[in-house]
Length: 475
Image 1 (cartoon, rainbow, N blue to C red):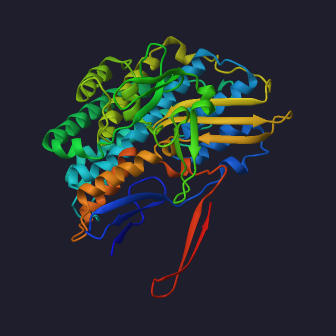
Image 2: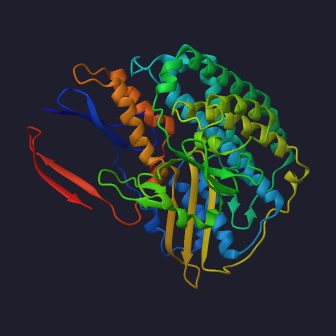
């Protein structure tokens, strides 16, 4: 008889989930499913609120990427108001956005994924964490923590808060940057640059020492989607959408984010609160695509800053000019983005306009609907608001990066499970590798489980012996 392996909970991710691995009669993996078993109803309980409240409410969706939600939210509000913000306000937003990306990527690597790389996939789970890293390499542990702290402190220097920031508002910014805070940020740049280069060297050494594993780890072919600037360069705040095929051909280019509903569609699944997304013109499953740092580097033509461009050229060589598909390269992509973020923050801090007090434009509701889009650390993010004549919200839709990656996450765990999980003798380290396939994506489940529309659910009732005596299914 076939068997079932349950990994519950999945560890070192943001949110609550489990993985089911199905074995056939011979003990080989036949299927693997990623279940997200939490639900948060922001899209529903925000109905009836005034639209300008959303930039205050939506950062509470997530303590890791609140800036991304705020930026998408204010951009939707500004579309409703039909206004353009001052240049300094956009500069400050871009600085905070890059700072959040640095903080989030540092958390993903040093706290969540690096324990597997630096301590070993089969090491003791009790010490396979950031504390274990700090014990083995105290300098690296402290540097990883401080790299994350740098991103949070940049937000605090500009808005007064490290996490659920309040200074990004419809029309611009609430607070101007002071000379003292600008200098404090600039003073920290050399340290975080050094840490980033050290980390890239460390990751490259791991790749060299474990080439076969790195190249075979969830090396799934898919399409990739992300924002690009007008010149095809790396872009987080604004821009158009590019979609590339698994072979590197451009499937769609210069798509307007405001038309997202014409080319992105969501699909409920029976085993999870997390929906799946696909490129609408190709249907499901042909239209499955990935988003996030790996995908962003796969769709762009170049980086904007010199040090990041140098690393990007090495990254691009991995795929011989075609997309890099291996999920393990998400980590490398994150550090290239961290490097770019630090360089861009330094450039913007030295821009003469950064200290201007012309930071806000005021307006009221001028049209009923607004859409905001930006790149969150985990991928492209959309906020879509519809209002009544009084400005109260009557429909809200969030398209979160983790949901867009959901089909690929399921493919990744199946690929890794088939490599490492054998029914006759199951090692804890093998199951940890399956979890590691999820950690490559760095999913944010609190962000993504809003479930507007159908909510498929399965309930099993078991007796004291663990036997299933009743099953109930909805959706």
